[in-house]
Image (tube, rainbow, N blue to C red; front, top):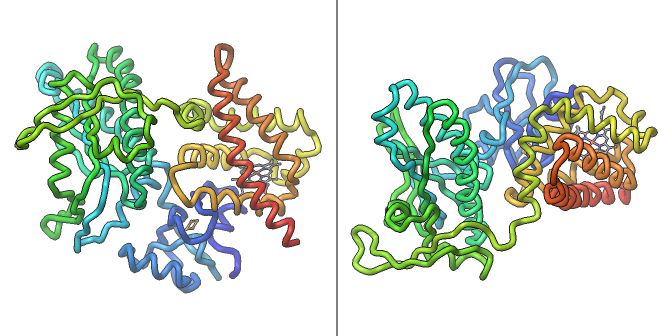
Length: 426
Ligand code: HEM
Ligand code: FES
């Protein structure tokens, strides 16, 4: 195939999401064609299948599967991690409805009525929006989608593009821990601006649910139905009574590796509408957090100013190995933005999305063409770790650096694997 639209973006240093590296698997490279559709190649078989299964209208094309023979005007659709994650909702059969095994997370804001009574309408809407933003991100970053909001409640579903119950449940639990952390951050801001602090309760359950788009033809919404959905909501309402922040059901705990969760307390309680007591576990952390956790938590802070981070990184890289500078034939300006963007996306989704490793192998293969050799990777890691400690500044950063070191090892090993295949082929 001629150069694809994705190749053109990369050549022109335009940030263009491509999680699977251009293999027609992740759909994150999709674009909307605004003008010049007649100049585009026909959809490949892979693209045509995806478009049919997901009900795309013909203006949506996969940039990695499409080439152009003349001028085309288009816009990128996926511009953030959150949009990339919400694409999972498309895998649900549109109208037919389907039954799935899912982890269901329900999170509720406590004392919402008091908050609504003592603040102006404008402030209540502002606070609710900040609340939903802070609590929605952990759902999206851990493999879930936001299924709906109900008043002061947010519901996340895990398992739409996965069938492995352990991965599904650990995504939901990681998300619950992320939400507790997010609310602590938000509370600092709300305490300063409004003199309030929010508290939350989270219930997580694993079971079956029917999913489908339901409603009047002019307003269809993703809807989730089933007994297990009600159970998740009832577990959440027990958090207040039992004095716990996160409660999970036995069904969730059984799917997790034995001993992987730190359980503060196990309680038996009667859920509303049930005849028998059920076992609920109050959990407060993983006994052995993933080595990536601290890198994932710090990536936002580190790459907050992506161009400053990149400038510092390239300065460190070239100080350690001056001969690398000549590989960057177009300079490092726009390249830095692409590197920061790629790191952010890869670090947050490394173990959660199956396309990411394939994308990294492809990136490694392409780096052979950029003149990158296998022994450059060690210098890359050293320069990156130095930059991280430069940006984080003085203080106890050992654990964060260790987590980054392990995360970079995984990223670079995948890129080297891809480079190795390319070198053997040449
Ligand atoms: C081993 C050390 C590395 C060196 C010396 C290196 C160097 C380069 C060079 C020379 C280019 C082409 C620039 C141009 O066309 O002007 C490039 C592109 C790129 N690099 Fe690296 N790189 C390294 C590792 C990495 C790593 C670890 C990542 C991210 C995880 C990364 C992400 C990118 C991206 C996103 C591009 C844009 C092109 C594309 O997507 O194919 N690089 N790199
Ligand atoms: S589908 Fe195009 S990059 Fe993944």
